[in-house]
Image (tube, rainbow, N blue to C red; front, top):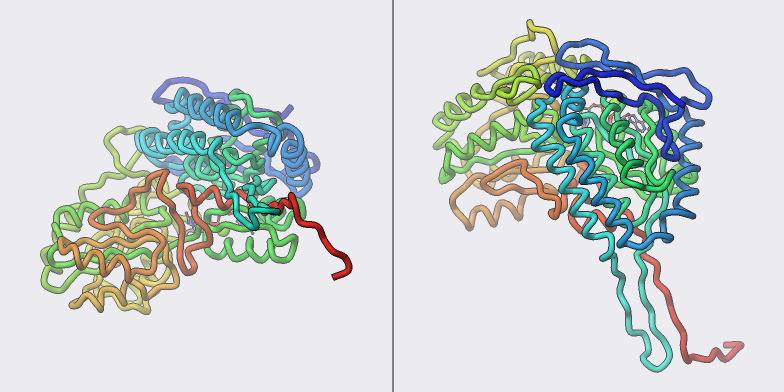
Length: 504
Ligand code: NAI
Ligand code: MG
C-alpha cells in the first residue's frame, strides 16, 4: 500500500485524506522501481502541500498492462452500454456529493477560487460525465446495402482500446472529465497522467472511480513528470491512443513519439493566440465584458484566452476606456475569499514565463496602459496587463502567454480585421462583436478557428465540439464528435448468397 497525505480544507474545516501513490488496478501502490517524488505546491502561499509518487517508465508499463487486461476481460466489449452508462452516472453523483472538498483541494493545488472550481469546473465536469453517460448505449454504426440478393455490410464502432490521457494543470478536474467521460462511454480503458503541477484531484477522483464500481484497471492514474511518464505513455507499443491537452511544443513530441512507436491515434488540444474583433456596431459594454472575461478567466491560463483584441478605429478610444475599467473591476487574491474572481498563476515557472513576456512587450516598444508591474505580494500573482501600440511581429502578439496579458490593436475595415485575426499559427478560438448580422455571418465564416463566438466569448457546452485548427490541434473533444476519437470503425462484409468461382 502507498501512503496518503492529510490536507486541511479550510472552508469545510476538515482534514482531507489524499492518496499519494499510483492508482493501478483500483489500488494505490508505490512505484515499482523508483523513489522519485513530485512536490506539490500551493501557488497562493508558495508552500509545499505534500509529495506524491512519480511514476517511472516501468510503472507506466504496469499501468498499461492493467488497462489492457481490463479491456480484454471486464470492460471493452464485455460490458453493455447500459452498464457503462450506469457507472458513469454513479461517478457523476459521487463527484457532485464531494464537490466542495474537491473544489477546495483544486484551489489549494491550482490557485483558482474555490467558488469557480466548484460552480464552473466541477459543475461542468459532472454534466460532462452525465452527457457521455447518455451516449454509452447509443453507439451506433451503419448497415449498408451492397447487393440485396447476396450481401450486406455493416459497421461497428469498436472502442479503440487502451488510451493514454495526458492532461494539463489549468483545469485539472475538467480536463480529467473531458477525457475520461467519452473514453469510458464507448468502452476504452485509461492510463491517466495528470500534470506534475496538479496531481491531487486526479488522485482523489480515482478513489471515486473505485467507489462508483468500475472494475480494476479500467481507470489507472499515474502522476509523473512529463518527459518521464508522459513520454513513456506516448511511445508505448501497447497504447492505442493518446489524448493530450497542453502546449504545442509537447503536442509535437507526442505526435512524434506516436509515429516512431506504433502509430497510435493521437488527439491534441493545444494552445492559441485567439483574437476578438470589436466592430463599430457592437454593444461596447457587452463586448468589453466578454473581452475582459476572455483574458482574465482562470488568470489567463486558458487555451482559448482572448489575448489579442482588435478594435475598429471609429470606436477605439471609447472602447479602450470601457475595457480598462472592466479589467480593473476583476479582483485577484486568495481562492478561499468568496469575493475574488481570480487566483495566482499555477507555479513559479509559469509566473516567470509570463513576466518575461511582459518585459519583452516593453522592450519591443508596446505601450503599457495597465499593469505591467512585478508582484510584491506572496503567491504567483500577475497584475492584469494591457498593451497597446502593438505590431504583428512582436512576441506578445505572436506567442501564447498564458497569463492575464492582453494586446490591443486597431483596424479600419472588415477585411483588415479578418487578416489581423488570422495572422497567427494558431486557430483555437475567435470572438466577433457586432450588431450587423450579415457581418457576423461573413466574419465567422472567414475566421480560421475551431470555435468562433459571436457576441460572447469562452463559454463551452458539453454537447458542442471543441478543438483547434492550424497548430492549435488535431481532433475534437465534447459533443458526439469526441466519440469518434475513441472508436475505431470496423466494416463487416457479410455474404449470404454469392458463390466464388475459382480460379478467377
Ligand atoms: P506542457 O504541455 O509541457 O504540459 C502539459 C502536460 O504534458 C503535462 O501533463 C506534462 O507532464 C505533459 N508533458 C510534458 N512533457 C511531455 C512529454 N515530453 N511527453 C508527454 N507528455 C509531456 O505544458 P507546460 O510546460 O506545463 O506549460 C507551458 C506552456 O504550455 C504554457 O505557458 C501554455 O502556453 C501552454 N499550455 C497550454 C495548455 C492548454 O490548455 N492548451 C495547458 C498547459 C500549458
Ligand atoms: Mg512543458
